[in-house]
Image (cartoon, rainbow, N blue to C red; front, side):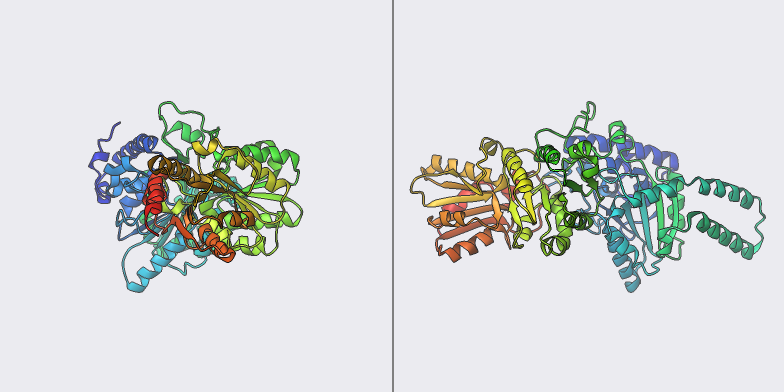
Length: 621
């Protein structure tokens, strides 16, 4: 790998003296560096390969950290990290104790805010830009946002409140992709901007005339500029961005470094907020990612020289098992529909899209709309299944309450990546859904721990339940010890039972495997006999479970969720109502700040592994 220029880059100012030929060479070296490192560690590949030149040009023209650069969603910040002194730590990307795959202020003064969810960069940028004005501080604020993130309504709420800020620059990275391919009116709008033949022909004709018109004096120059602006509005019928107070420029080539640098330098002279619309190629420089950018959006480690077909989701995963079963059920229930928020492959919905395309809906990165849309479908007798990652479902909490719960709408939530999630750190953990959904009376919530339970409960929720309901499951594969367990169809199971046992260990989902390991280790170490209970139905709590648990002297409940308002607290309150006065230990996520690491490492950090369970039991009550 050629890194002649890259080795010289220690901080952003190092690229300011490079000429354009050297910048283009540096872009190539960065791409090779990214492919080699991300193939070893896993991470977000396609999006980062697409913004190499854009990030180089931004750092060449602006001065971070005085000029603030915000990334939306945040996972396309790898080139930024390379240029801001973190190149030598890239082998630790997303690893325990290593650098984050998202902007992280703890790592560098060049990362102003944490970022992991879509559509918020413009709102944050407006706040920072306004604060600079109030404090009379110099510097520009640049929000780099993808066209996929523009499908989230928060982006427009931010745009609507720019208030003439002349230190605000929005760079629209238009790669015609979000995570799944962009759909909807906004994507079509961008396409019309890019491909209007009337605009290009007329622009060429007018340019020819203007180039041959002598410009004499400031008045004539202003007149020509006014005529061009009026002409552009006639052809485009204006852009939505100009109507909302922006100076709009574009679309421009997002890989042309001289053009990019010229654009950004000129943007500094704008007297109001400016929107720079760039066209880029997601996955640029790595053929498999260029051909299938969605599949290479977020990847585990892989062999960059022998890439499998990424379009085929791994067979051995909860997401795939869910997707295959849902497609099967769609054949039996013609009213069943599937909704995703730009996560077709991530949630396994490619199967239902292939078999029943008219009943598959990708709404873009717009979880709030996904839930309200589902409520509308349900109001007309359809059976919508909303498949969303746990960490993104919380964006639609208001819609869950007002549009689904209050209407008792027949909506099924399929919550992927529930519990602890490796690699992406605190912005992507699925630790809130069990707590906030269990606050809702009338919402039936289950948490299967293996594939057979997932298939059974998904079918049961489709065929035998009405109203708001949810099924949550972990990322990746079923835990080996739990894979051996047969599905009983019961709301809870006694996985290990000893006559006369006084202590029981309880959990739900993948964390249950830690209890089985703890039980075996405790039996081998002390001969102590512990019962192990797996909860499947989390809300409402089964009355039979409460009766079963009331006979124990000690209960230890462990969950990969937040402590406050979590299932453990609900369970303890219900047991006390039943008259339980024994010892109750609750192991849960103690705080929201979770580092990026593997799930076993996270369990150890958070006190949810075997050793923590046994240590808690050994302590005097």
